[in-house]
Image (cartoon, rainbow, N blue to C red; front, top):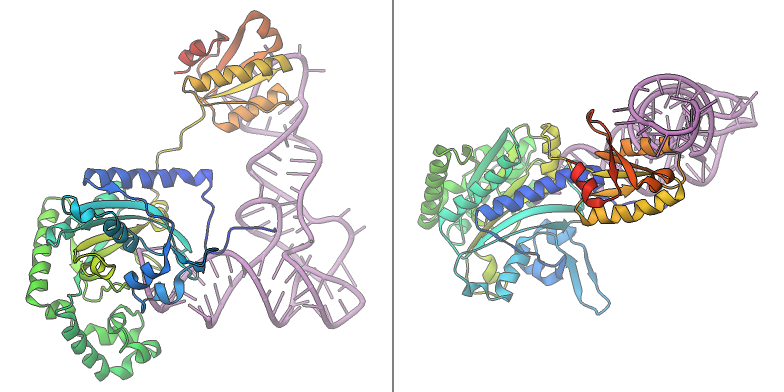
Length: 424
RNA sequence: GUGGGCGUAGUGUAGUGGUUAACACGUCAGGUUGUGGCCCUGAAGAUCGUGGGUUCAAUUCCCAUCGCUCACCCCA
């Protein structure tokens, strides 16, 4: 065929929409229950926003951005992640003058040029939340609780929660030195990739799944053991609050995972991740962390922030895998079946008044036998068929026949209010 | 960017070195006179991903290419 969706993109067909509205609806409801306001940032931004915000050394900036010059010569980039744009908006609109912190959520597509595979596409959709302007570990816990509330409201089961602290500007450099020394000592055991690159980003080694790197990272110094006093206190308070939430039944138990790191430069202190228990492939369905340095990097005054992003494609994959049923899309109320041209013309206007009365109505295709129209009505899933022949037109009445269940058909006048009232 | 698997009607599959490529579901139409679902009958619908090669002959064998898919990298 001549045209198809570009690699890594998908049409979301009507039969799949029930999942999407279920997920978006749940996200909006949960976000509202935590007092978050929705923000929509543009689908594209100045490329420099991401170069500065996400970090030049990251994979996203180095090789995954959809960047191009527009006709005016500006270099723009399709949004690869949501946090930097939200922080840009926070600065641009002077939100530091609002009561702090500011709670924002979004749900929109993101674009990354990657090789597609299970749970990974080039245009993916995220539900994301941010709390900006509050350094307290209380809001870290609030964000994590919100993430869990969202996932559990969807009905997902068998999830695990991992948290970690990766320190801050005060303690991370010292820790990285320790880690580097350790990696250098066991350099020969590292996988080929990391033997070359561990000096550039030693944290990545901890995340590596190759046996060699795993064996080295098991005994590697853990960041949580080398936090500065402030970071340690922050982490302890966070764990304490999470423990309270677990005790109150508002959160699943968590584990501290020393090897949990984040790929974006702006993260500090708290990082966390929810994933299905049976891990395989691209499994993380919700992940986030604190990004206290970001607003200042983007030119605002120093302002702490924390948030998460959750991939809707992956969430839906898990909903399907777990056999979770979602509410069906709205069904059709009525199909108008005609016998004769005059009847059909009359049904067109009758359908219009019925729609105005709030019913969903379609008129069966012209030029088909009645049997064919009834078959069509049946396949359409409509609740009722309204049958009108030219000879009924003279009597001024039609037949309203239920298509679901075993109700009896009734004669009705050609009056939208009467017909609507008959459709229970 | 690297590696594995796969490419036959709308969908899911079968099949063979040789006349009109099969089946199921779906679609459409019929099963007489104004009524769906079950059933029966029929029809439409495939340049067998694309290009090249081997061969008297290829959808079937070989190569390339593109696409899909899974995994690595990385990430939601």
